[in-house]
Amino acid sequence: MEQKGLLIVISGFSGAGKGTLVKELVDRYGYSLSISCTTREPRPGEVDGVDYHFKTKEEFERLIDYNGFIEYAQYVENYYGTPRKFVEEEMAAGHNVILEIEVQGAINIKKQYPDAVTMFITAPSAEILKSRLYGRGSEDEATIDKRMKRAITEADSMPVYEYIVVNDDLDECVDQVQSIIIAEGSKSKYKESFINEIKDELSNM
Image (cartoon, rainbow, N blue to C red; front, side, top):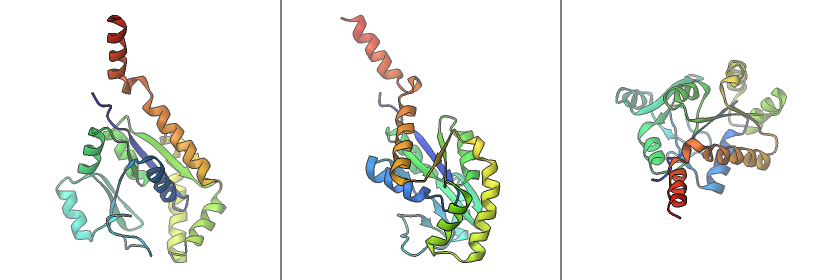
């Protein structure tokens, strides 16, 4: 029987580089990326259906009513949600699925999927975090201030995550996350079929 895919939950401070990290993981290792829905406006260069499924508030709330999300949350006055159908189909097919979601959503996911692998991505310091937000050039000072204040609250939830990964050098960060995924997928609880096959083979020798 095919091993079920892992659910990999990646959260982090805005500006920590989690979006870039996730893109590298998908490009290098072929993981399935669950594309979230959001009601926020697209940033320059973002494409609907690639970066996010951009929805109106009314469309999003209709999906909530249809139980179309595994989780959803409000963050800086916008909705974000994880579509249920894609995630469950990909995992059943044996594919590892990455969710890049906010802290509230990650906590809700862990309640529904206790085996989910949770990681929190952070910059090496608060000062570097703030400079990265300004470096994006896509948000005004008031929005950046909101994101930094939100980070104070998010920091309280860091101990909930199984892994804290510091994104100082992107390649090192990608390697560290990949090592965690490999180790998690090698746990004996996911290898029951393989263990039984080896036992059968040994018994029939």
